Amino acid sequence: MPQPAQQLLRYTVLTVLTVFAALIMWQVSRRNVVTGGPQGRQQIESVSELAQSRPIVATESFRPQTSEITATFSGKIHPWETYRLAFEVAGRIKAIGTSQEDKPLDDGDRVTTGQTLARLDDRTFKARTSEAIASLEEATTDMNRIRELRDRNPRAVTEAEVQEQLTELAMARAQQEIALKNLEDAVLTSPVDSVISRRMVNVGESVQANQTAFELVENDNMLLVVDVPESQIYDLQSRAREVAQNDRDQTGDSEDRVFRAHVVLEGHNRFGRQRPAIEGEIYHIAQVADPRTGLFEVEIRISNEDHSLRAGMVATAQIVTDRIEAYKIPETAVIFRGREAYVFTVENETRPLKAMFWDAGMADVQKAHRVLLSRWVDQGSHILVPADECTFDQIVVRGQQRIANGQLVRVIEQESGNRQQAPANPTRFSESGTHPPGAAQRKIKL
Image (tube, rainbow, N blue to C red; front, top):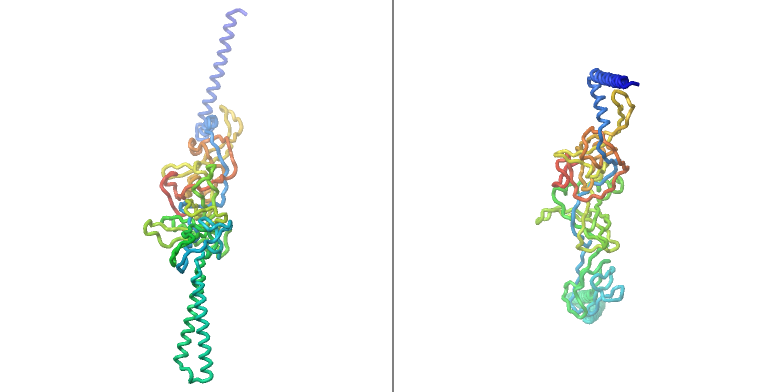
């Protein structure tokens, strides 16, 4: 083909392509004008929204569960009871009781009820007892002789002589009882099963009457004493009344009939791990505040069957002030903005997929939905949202800071089930998220 013909053919093909492209552009612009109303704009927006990149988020599935609202306080462990024992009579220590290892009792040894702790030199007390017995026998004999004389001859003994002899007999009996008691008091015994915290006497030492010789502590159960401010004592008293009522009526489950507290020792084991929590029970709430501190003492009973707890240990108590059906959401999943607190959930939708002006079918997408929390309880590592507040399914736990309400997202990870997290910090309450986490303590009544 000659060169002019080739150039003509090339120009012709280019002209045809240009006209065809112009027709396509005219057709597209015509469709946009026809669909220029709200529906048309929605289709155009759908095309651009589906085509653009979506933020990546991670979600978890949450279900309501019975959750504990706790208030955290610290305090020291005290023995259940403390006994200071002393001889009621003066004397010299003759012997100290022996332990199970057949050694003299000392600090830290366990003793049982009635076990001998120490004994005084009782020779003087035995002699006085024998003297009192002899005096009683003599007074009894004299009384019997006077009665025989009076029976034979009423005028042989006057009434004054009879009364005098009766008095001597009564005094002899009293002296015998005193002597026997002093002899018994020469032996010091333990009133309960306990542990010797201090032994303050030694063999050969002289002691005065009522001078403390042993100090015992009863430690099968221990008491954790914490100080509660006035602002929170009302919640504890309300819970105490509720538990007592449930126990009387036998309503609710077993946990609703016990005023529970979870106690954690402040110390760590040799591997640097915190020791397991100990279940305790509120034993007593003070009716009057300490005049020096203005705080109310609350005693928590702790079982110490293995006798591992010692008085003076520092522990933290998470006192259960209420139990509710709630969603247990990680605090990191909650966004705090000014006076609001909210979370993002993910909803599945199906939208038409457009390519230019052709319908390419339907596409499954995930859309973020912001849920405002009007009632919630801050438990440190997690947030409790009452089950009657709203309904959750998939909650965004990562990436929520980069999304907006109604925005399409891409879920890369989904985990089922609630996280099990132990309460860490003092309870904070809010009705509208008035402060971000870590701020001053917040309270409302749910």
